[in-house]
Image 1 (cartoon, one colour):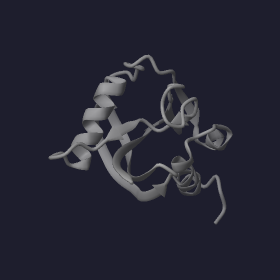
Image 2: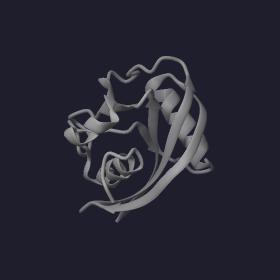
Image 3: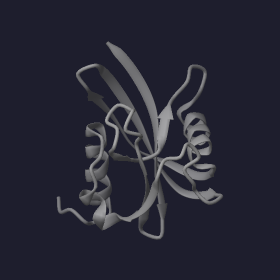
Image 4: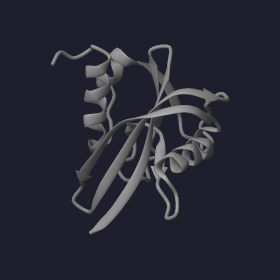
Length: 134
């Protein structure tokens, strides 16, 4: 079974979170996701997060803090998601790889279709923002 370690950025700006639309050709394609990508060998999670967000969005991460870590078992692979909150960055995010981006109000996150592994992240954000009770 394939194991994949992924650095994920939950990018905040004025009570909105940046989402990217996965390409239709990708695993769980056509769904909105929090930007990020694979942690390469010899790379820390923070290094991977900064590299991936620069490659995908053309931004430089200034402040990031760990939010959560979770494992998710898909039928064909196991993913370990290292999720970080990005509270400050330099540059204007753009879809470098042609992917559509959208700033979504936190309260509307539940209205978007995410990859299965991202659902616990959405729930955690909504809880911490006081949108969900419990």
